[in-house]
Image (tube, rainbow, N blue to C red; front, side):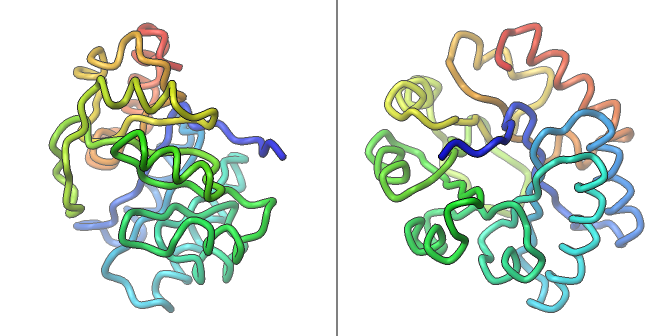
Length: 212
């Protein structure tokens, strides 16, 4: 079953250094700017804190009809009835996440090689995040992925594959000509002076390059 979701501008949050009010404001501004898929990523919060924040973020995302993906934590996704979950290499196996989430929810996965991508697809992933294309400033450990590998992954699986890792409006031209489904960003929007404007500019540049 094909689920309806659009990964063209996929925004992954980072609440580090923001109080909750500022964080929620930035998330909403990003949505106003045209974000098409939103992932809440919290590595440090307790389960209760994560659920409480996720409920608030979900309420905002619903206003803009944008699906909310919870990073890593299937329990949190289920607790707030989020639209999906994203699992990385060290998280729950994709097939287990799919079993718990059900067929109608979105399950995303990280992939850095073609065999990894094929395995993720076979286990039931709905989309892939591929990277890091550039080094990132987030607290996630990154292993760089070449644009050739990204292209090979896009051509190897029938599900959407998104580029991720240090991308911004000034460097996404490296992706030109690669059949990605969209771009994933964290800092380019999260740390921008004006998140709404940053999202708009990023989307505009991606369209100019025929990436989305």
